[in-house]
Amino acid sequence: MLGKVFKAYDIRGTVPDPLNEHMAWQIGYGCSKFLLADATSAGEGSPMMKNVVVGRDMRKSSPGLSAALIAGITDQGGNVIDVGMVDTSFIYFAVNHLDCAGGVMTTASHNPPQYNGFKVSKRRAKPVGESTGLADVRKFAAMADKTTVVKAGGRVEKRDLWEAYVRHVRAFLDVSKAKKRLRVVVDASNGMAGTMVPRVFGKKGADAGIDLIELHFDNSKGEFVHEPNPLVASNLRQLQDRVVTERADLGVCFDGDADRCVVVDEKGRIVGCDLLTALLARHFLKLSPGSAIVFDLRSTKAVTEEIVKAGGRPVRSRVGHVFMKSALAEHGGVFGGELSGHFYFRDNFNADSGAIAMAVVLSVLAQSGKKLSELIAPLARYSQSGEINYHIEDKDGALAALRKEFGEKATIDELDGVTVDAFERLGWWCNVRKSNTEPLLRLNLEAKDRATLDRALAKIAPMLGQKVDH
Image (cartoon, rainbow, N blue to C red; front, top):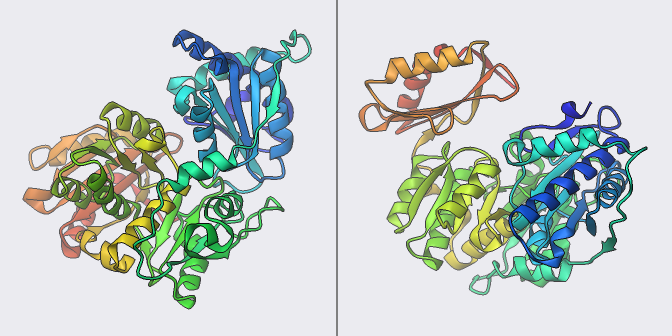
């Protein structure tokens, strides 16, 4: 049963079948054994290295699953610092702020309310995925028998770290140069942003010097008015309408655990996360000249161009927070952005944060004296297909055909999937990645103009299988 809930980057499933409280106890036991051993092997000498930070989101099943998880951790010998109901990025902060062995967040992120799960981080809040420890957690959990285990009696301490967390996030916020108070509509998706945003920015934005209009902030029922996934355009419609009717300067929509966000401009138009990465890169390069900026390799070429223009070092990364955080650390980067709505910050322990992303966007807008649409327009200089999925059984065969077809006409690399760069010669480039779990190929294509985009799509699409409309 454990195999059904362990994924590539986290643990997730429907409650109570297959994920239940007994399984949560096993997972807690496995997490504790892995995290404490990892901290010990790294030679960490802090007395806090037997401590594991635990938090949870607002789902109905989260209190029970979190309690069972905590029992598993303490029965194995770990000590728990329970920070309560928080956003996922709060856990990353707490692990570093308290210098702990790691942290576990009880959440299913953007999945519907019948789902739940766990996001695991090790020391310094480094992500734990299948290849970085989750396989060990699964093995240890499978071996744990609640009826026979000798309880090690770890301690549980409840801690309120909100004051320190708010101070940390607010260090990224500066709206002092705004010509007027910014009006911001925030859609919390009935998720953890409904708790985080008022605590960080103040009720109605009072503590942050902004006028904040709340949309779907009630998370007391553990249910969602719309799917808490801001990458799906239909989930942004209410935010877009509200921004226009309120004559707001921008809108921000968070996912269920508030570590991801998507922005819409004052006209209600969705701002691509790669375009936002390009905009924020310029901001961070002013603060840290010459630094590296890490970006998702599916991003528009405008990201690389803007980084170079601003004197920075562009670093392409594989898709996924494990790779983005690793690249940021490896290259000493100051900032990173991903198409998924995750934004990463050197001064946030190289971790992602929806709260900090919102703070930085507000700061950039306030300091520019321009409308958001005016800042984004020069960056949206190429035509993009967006991500298109194709159903195909022979994924490897299709990728081989793609390499063969364009091998002599383009530059090809396989950092993540297959990237075909024919921009200089043919006016377009694309990336095609395999789904880890389904017979799908995911295409992202960009061209110098719409006509070139359409021609390239007509050439490439038949090679990838049947287009999936949803």
